[in-house]
Image 1 (cartoon, helix red, strand yellow):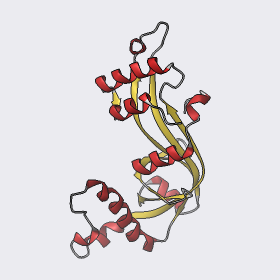
Image 2 (cartoon, rainbow, N blue to C red):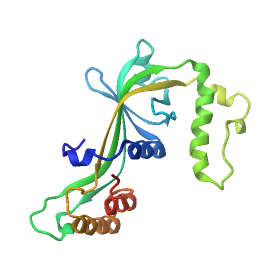
Image 3 (cartoon, rainbow, N blue to C red):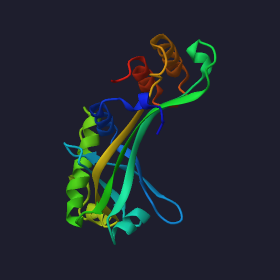
Image 4 (cartoon, rainbow, N blue to C red):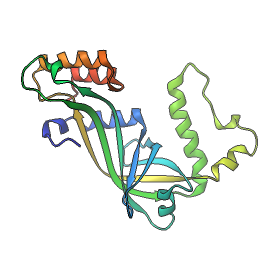
Length: 207
């Protein structure tokens, strides 16, 4: 997370809206000898007090949860882009990388296995709704017994959120005309992830 305070001033509702729309992140947990990571889709509840997700039963994080709850961090990122100093059109600039990141800090707990079916239905409904007018996929399209067999390999998890930290590094420390000039190059060169969105946000950073 970038240390400049100006990149941490975006209203929390913008950060939550971004995280809800993205609904995919990197889950991190301390472990010996190195931290554990899992790349997972998730669903925030209405008040953002928790996120529901699932893990493969053999995942080391899931195995750790089988004996105790665990402190964790969920990082939600993208869009991002390299920023060339030449794009600013002013002297004495250095290369950097603009990005958006929202981090949730909290506690992971296994949920009863009987919660899994409803969780998977809610997750698929969330993402399928974004594919309209395609007819949504639903679990009842699965052959009898197949879904139940697959669910034995995964476990439901709830991430109880205690804090949220966000960074919106969009060049807010530059004059408007300089930042907007760089944004046009971001859109043109596509050196990063979802650079068209990043360029749009650089034009008018959320407050």
